Figure (cartoon, one colour):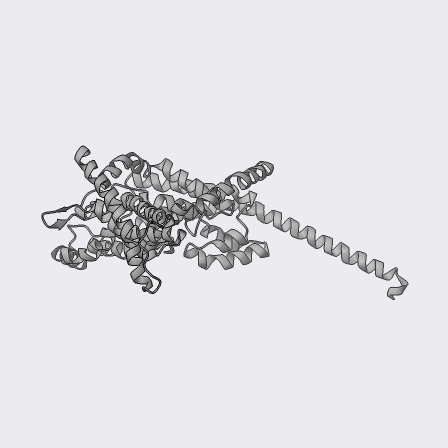
Length: 450
């Protein structure tokens, strides 16, 4: 078994790791990831407001505090919804600017100018103007993929024109800000004369504007992203990459974020409308059920390490518990180590997948509420799971169950690893003792040493 794992590790290191490294550094993947990170604070605050507006109480409750909260929320619904509508409700605007600004840095373009160009491009195709009003239908989850595509397109057009010196150049004496304003004129015209006619033609022949057409084309993929196979595949890829020392989370979240946000937005729309929550797989599900304590669900492992008989593992466990509570587990991954450790390969990769099957099944059966709020990934798992599901209690028990199951599955592998380290330690001590005895004997037998 050990030889098989060793061969697997070598194969992964030689073939998969270089490919994963290239994907992780790919400019579009990193730009999308950074764009979502830039928009994250606005979306977290907006999601929190939604949970406040729709408290976790029955509409028929007679409890005084709950009744007063529900009545206040109903009476002031429009006013209370404004922070949500102008944060989570327009998240595609933030994402569009963030993605384009990040991609601009790869081309050494001005991030602010590029971000504004992207924003204009998105509004051009996703904000139809009728009867003196702009439609905001595609400013939330329905417009995410359009925002990403348009942000990349606008930045590429800007970079292409600048690279080929198709720009308006002003004398060096002109201030840099004014010079940039004139530099962007031709890219703005290029965007208007390409994207806008495309949108009009699409609408004329299909009756759909660009965001609607994109969502229609991606509907099967978005639907598939909420399935158990999609959960298992994304977790498996993340764990394998991390085992090789590649930051798999950045790669997987960079790819999955658009799908997660589209699913979360649909869940929030359903919550606001009083309808059944449709989607299971969102970032809250990923963070608080599958990666408790970080990739590999290593918080339970940290608690087990504290009671280890081996001094090194015991020290790593004490060092890793506090960061692990906030889903930071580098001390465990690199200190134990878990990375490239054949003995811990199986639990590290498959524990999150087993917990995924359990949590997904329980949620699909209706015993576990679905995620309606976006939380920071550093939120401790039981708190984050409850917060994400509108402060329900059952997610806390689900997290505790996942932690216990992870601990049980890690235990035999950890004992085997501990036994190996203790044996190596005993061998080393025996060798040191033998060396000392040999040195002492050599010293007594050498007259020069007396």
